[in-house]
Length: 146
Image 1 (cartoon, rainbow, N blue to C red):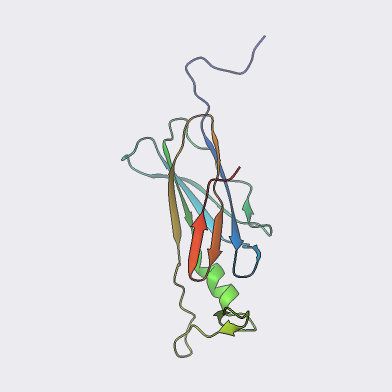
Image 2: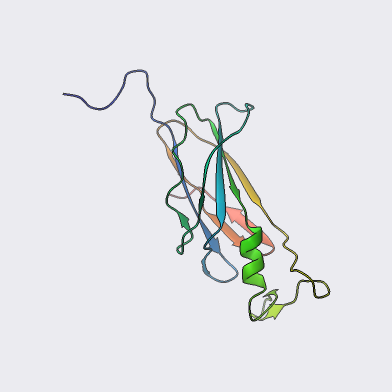
C-alpha cells in the first residue's frame, strides 16, 4: 500500500490571496500579483510565478511553492486598478460622503498613493496561508485568513 508520502520529503507550504476594495465594497478584479519565495530569512528572493485577480478578487492559480520555502513575498501591482476605479465616469476618489473628489491636483493623471503593495510573511512546511489584501486609495490592511 502506497500513501504517496516520501520519507524525508516535506510538504511545501501553500498560499492563496484575494483583494477587496473597501472604498467600493466589492472585490478588486484584474490586480496583477507576483509570488516570490526564499528558503531562509535572508536568502535571495526567487520569482516563482504570477497571477491576476478574477472577478471575485481571487487568485485561483498561484504557483506551488518550493519545498524549502521559509518566506513568501506577494507583490500586488495596484496602480492600474486604483487609477481605473478612481477616475471612472464619476471621476476622482471616494469622499467620506460617498461622492468623488478629483485627486489629479490640476487635471492630470490621477495620482496613486499606493501603486504597489508588497507583503512578506513567514511560512512553515505543510501549512496553508490565505493572505487577503483590503485595499482603498489611501490605505490597506492585510491579515492571515483561513
